[in-house]
Amino acid sequence: MTADVVSVSVLVVDDSAFMRRAIQRMLEKDTTIRVVGTAASGDEGIAMTERLRPDVVTMDVEMPGMSGVDAARTIVERAGPPVIMVSALTRDGAETTLRALEAGAVDFVPKPDSSLIDIVNVQRELIDKVKHFGSRRASLRRMRTVRGPATRAPRPTARSAPFACVAIGTSTGGPIALTRILPALPASFPLPIVVVQHMPPGFTRPLAERLDALCAIAVAEGEDGMPLQPGAAIVAPAGMQLRVRRTPGAARVALAPDTAGSLHVPSVDVMVTSVAEAYEGGTLAVILTGMGADGVAGLRVAKQRGGYVLGQDEASSVVYGMPRAAAAAGLVDRVVALDGVADALRELTGGAPAR
Image (tube, rainbow, N blue to C red; front, side, top):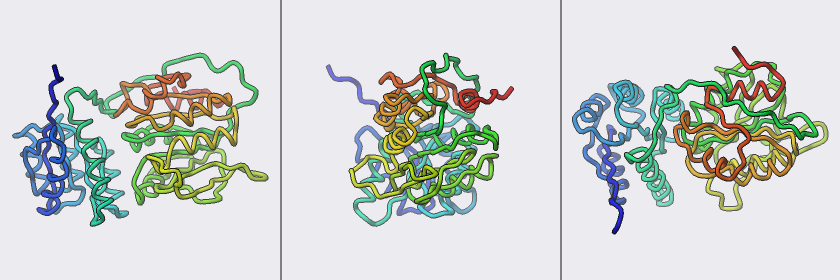
């Protein structure tokens, strides 16, 4: 006997009739997805969401009248379905998308361009995310409603050196998770921080600038040759693999195009592996919310060299994929709620948790 097929209903909101049709065609390539309606404006999208009660809404970022950000915020405030933003790959589009995530949208996909490869990739990403968030079996939890201290566990006992670098990996839900962690660290935080956030090209610089404006520590998008410094976070640029290399007098960022056919560029595995090779047992890794299993291979290298791993808990993860994979592989030393991550970092690096 075959299992019942779960059908996911979707409302598509976009002011462009062409884009509405394009998104509908992409989604309906998957027989388990039904587009139950399309809307041409934010106001119409809100009304149709309440009438049709879809499992997922895809929302254009920029629309005349009510913006996609405001429409997404209204749907979220009314306890509506998950909203996935569809964003143009421009700086303005990236900045607006980040505001939409802050307003409660669960994720975003880039608008397809005219290239066949781009359309195929966007279609795959869109279908995967719609099916994940729209399935009634999915365990979606909004991070903005979750509070809780870190789950305490013993500090590592067999260590030959103090921690030297923090390596953070995240994907879906990561931009908001980072806004809850990095601004809670003091300017005197004693270690450099390297971050991989899965994003399309054009999005990581606005993310880094937005974080820098919120944080006491310095935050910047990584550049080739940039030195790692205490009290500063480097965000890996989208479309490049970031590695940390030891040079005389400093550890520095080394950027290069992906040559290994990696699923993610930048990759958590690539970054964490390089941090572990540069700092040995001084690696303090953090694996946060995100789909898939990126990070497991890198965390395994870090653990083999004496590093320590914090993993976000399921309750505060938008998608408990990457942390679950790391925990299932036996690589997580301490499980923490999102709001406990900064406290754990301060504690493990010799500072007192905030009270």
